Length: 118
Image (tube, rainbow, N blue to C red; front, top):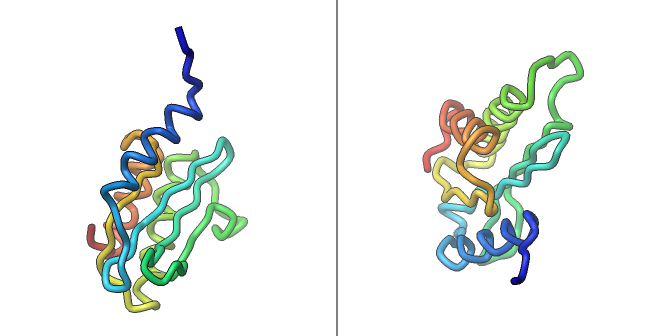
């Protein structure tokens, strides 16, 4: 019996999602990366292979204090703010193989609250 590690399972899910989701200049792909310490997100135009905007937990002010779910919501709001300044209002969500739960959901809700539509 072959055992699949957690990382391999996530990468398998990510490949499945990426087969269906594509970002364009008008509607870029919102990519999420989650680590143990923080979360990062970026808007990618797959046609031109360019990152249009990005935000990370490292871009939050040093005075920010909160748990990782609150941190993710703030990163989502920051990404939405950067997207608006870049002229982007709509995106497609690529959860990166992560379950739509917890920090990933908080980031998505924060981006929606900031004005990004997906």
